[in-house]
Amino acid sequence: MLYLAYLLIGLTGVSFGLIGAGGAILIVPILVYLVGIPSEKATGYALPISMMVSGVGSLIGAKQKQVNFMRALEFGIPVAVMTFLTRRFLTPQIPEILFGIPKKSALMVGFALILFVASLSMIFGKKFVPPEKPHPAIGLLFGSVVGLLAGVFGIGGGFLIVPLLVLFFGLDMKQAVPTSLTAVFLIVSSGFAAEFLNHSDLPWMFLGGIIAYAATGMVIGSALRQVIDGNRLKAGFGWFVLAVGVLVLTLEFLRR
Image (cartoon, rainbow, N blue to C red; front, top):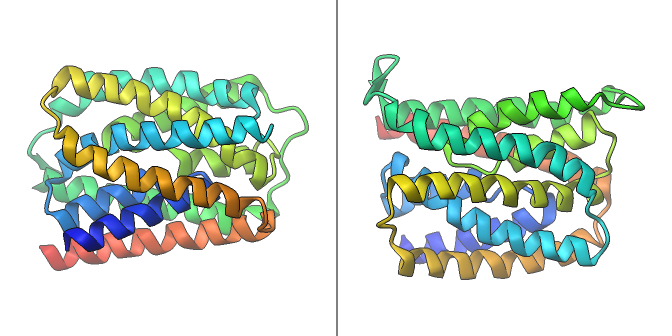
């Protein structure tokens, strides 16, 4: 199972480089269901992994001149602040029993529901006409919401930021992906800082191996992104996230 986990983690890097998301939303279930790490720890472990891998992707995107730094900062700064505050102060206060079920199950179910919303927005998002000049408050509002979710679930938020960049800001997928990765780097860096303040005894040898596999996949995914049509990326992204959400709910149901 551990070898399978490493293989799938490499593929998460490909996903991250190809569609700007899929890092933590895949790493968390892999760590929980294949490696056997409790969900609350898995969400913390996902932060340094996503930080390093998104940093590699951001550098690749900047070199290819595909990063919209204005949009990255517009999302990245409010999300980063909210992620730090959530991870530092709110997450440790979540009770062990939430809505009548164990915290670890509640987190994974909530995680799956968020995936459903994000996937449907991308699958049916072509019917939405983005505003010509989006108000700056849109980035602040959505950034705060994404930051809250990123802090609770230990994710970078790319699977939410990419749809927002495409639907509300009119970026094409090939620009939205590296822009999202740049924002995600800021976000998970702040989340990791908060996590490190709460839990400094992280298994660095284990995490280092995962980061190496995922970063290699990131380089491959970034290369593939240059030769795949943006509209296909958008549709594929939506169905991919939907499939992950269904899988998480199914595994959580079977585990109970």
